[in-house]
Length: 256
Image 1 (cartoon, rainbow, N blue to C red):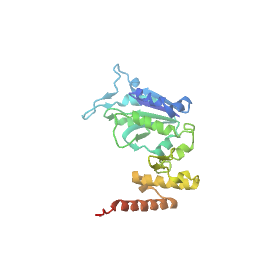
Image 2: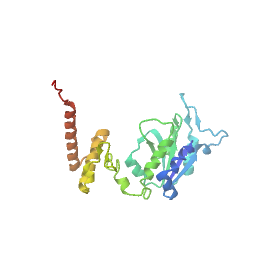
Image 3: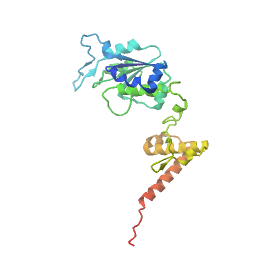
Image 4: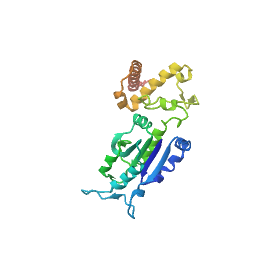
């Protein structure tokens, strides 16, 4: 897969692309990441890429001409052009999986107060990393490249690594443990030491539901549970209710 990134600050990408799994994928030729300085698509001696907004207001707006020229110089028949903007649709794991089947992604990294609205006519997707504002789209582009690249065959060492992780089950991932079996009074759950694969699977599924219910109840509300999962959810709710009752009951101090 080819990732083309249109940015004013290509240097931001240098270190992340030269470390760990992404670097290995690039070295193997599985993916290619090409950086393009937006100023190279200007035609004035000052290489201007922004201007004051029509209608007034603070800040500067990125100009339409250099961005469209950059897109047109890179776009091919199989290309998908993505504008990174807090106004876009939220990026999530299903979106990452969908993009992983593409052959060529072109990212436009915004800066300043925004991008001339006419750029939207030349893009295929507008994607947001979340409901917050950053100084530019570069970090978002890196996050999406990382998320998408790891789903491409042979980028990770094991296919199971992408199948048994958060959101691949539509819920958060189950808790992980490794040696030692005991650390400062906290022990690894005995079910994981049993060697019984079915019991381990059941424990992991139940604890994944428990973790999701605790930290992301919004995900739970959207799910259609199987009969097995409904049973786990009912057990968890009963356990949490009992725990809450025990916490409220305080021991009575004896006068003797």
